[in-house]
Length: 270
Image 1: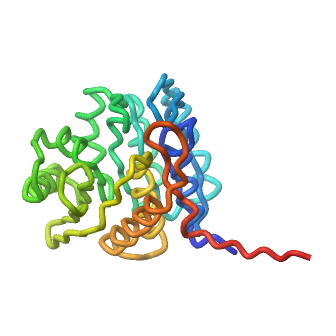
Image 2: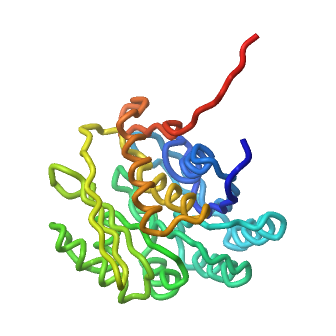
């Protein structure tokens, strides 16, 4: 099987394998594309929480991006955890050099267990500079609240926050609604011309670690293959829902989802 496209992932590492760059690589691979990486931070964590975060030197992050893309040009880029303003500045500098048009930003700010993964100065720079350079931004409810300084309790609040992100310069917005207490999960896609509410079944499980990373990487993969941004969101949501439904029930806390749900391997036995 030949990869359908090439994707660069700029994100932090999750030692437990359920989220971060590990989830990104699994998602991109399972959906049939080739993954390259620029690691922004190394975390020690498991399904119960984050023990420590060690940031990678911003210049090293810049070099990872430039050196990888110099040899294998990506069709799209997924951006995840950017923990400091210096890292964001270096990523922006690299993006200006490589000039890839299809970019998905997952503004990772808070871990599933509640640990903060980004500082205040970095949040401001992300809002003022980075959000304007990407094709779509994919925050969950807590992240959208931080970015827009808005309390989100309803679908209408999600739409209001999405419009505020458009006002900040975002081209497309997908706000993930899993944190709201609706019977079904409602995800909001919005740009200046279109709005779509994706309704999905809610599965009663604690095993949802890495869903945000997985969704943004799935969206990136579909976009990289030429699908529209909205269609890519719809397909990404379906992939994540299937992965949640068939989770392997690993760990004592918020366990990982099943990234292999779409992978079919033909084996021949003698």
